[in-house]
Image (tube, rainbow, N blue to C red):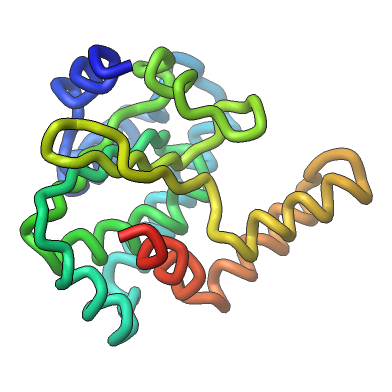
Length: 195
């Protein structure tokens, strides 16, 4: 696994580089990943707008800021993502803001579909769910993982799947409304619990 992590880190990009990559692809009428469709393009366009808004509006709690400033040893937060992923659009801006609070935290992103070996090491309930944050120490040993959703959203998804079998468009809309009301607070609680 260490070699897989090393290879993915060599391909990793910063959050601003990721935002530029997604925007450049959108300008060409494309989404990230090898599969292209109108649906993925439309999700990517919507997510780009969400991330632009969240980049400006996300506020970290005092508790989050204090906890993240306490990180003394260097860490790399390697995140698997794709531009079309709604959960990534809601969570990456928060993760980025948290990482910006401490120079000991180096946030790097890789595309899931270009890093399948890495993704397969960090499945969620057997699925390639993203975003997936892998916190690494300065020797690239895994400290912790997080994702693809904050604790409350994860429970909402599990409960809905148990009752209805799968997620439909109505639930996905409901989940996005929940994210908007939560304002990144739940993901902050999750992240500070492992740093």
